[in-house]
Length: 275
Image 1 (cartoon, helix red, strand yellow):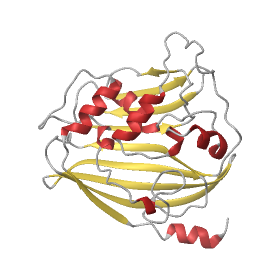
Image 2 (cartoon, rainbow, N blue to C red):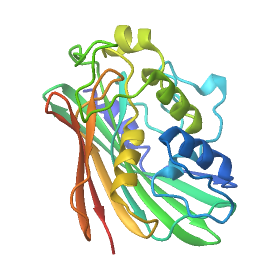
Image 3 (cartoon, rainbow, N blue to C red):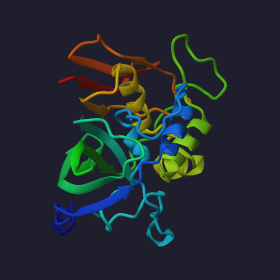
Image 4 (cartoon, rainbow, N blue to C red):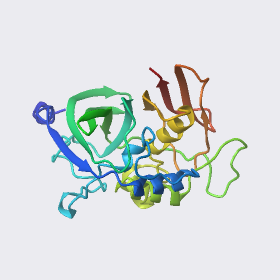
């Protein structure tokens, strides 16, 4: 790895970006419909943990969109010299639930940039800290870990489209991925462009969003909207053809959950802690 590239990427540590959102109930209603929730969130209602990902997503100018559909690197995020980018982990502390209909502010700061070498080659880990406030009070703190890496060996699909899904498992549809991308304003092509997935990234099919799977787990593990800490780590990819099941763990002050693929691999691990 060129030392000058490493130094340039590390120079982004400390960069900040602020945005404001009116917190309209409309994105929450669309997300509820996508998730199959029989609710119609309205002004004044508390926003479930992780649903804030449907907010604070200002539009991106066409000139600033990179080849993968994300905002191009080098604007806010460092220009890591790798083709793949993935949301690898998250750590969210809800100090008090956000309220719909009340303007909120989010300040994002690049906390760290770290280069490592693993079995799949060189990697770059970027940690971004988000602080969300309403009426001058911090409601939510989040550490988002993004990993950059080069294309690895081709991934294998667990089943062909149309094959039966094992009992107790479920798969995501193309439309679920499309609407989740829409409600979170996520243009990443791995979620909607099959040719890009196969020819550029080496994936066998569309990739299910890590945040969407984290929301599946958090919604199932958190029985009421309240202060909490929810952390998750993605460990294996899930495609639209991949059967998965949720394991929520036992209720309590600390609850460990995971998402299991039909081949026995764990695709996500999560922990919920109550104060």
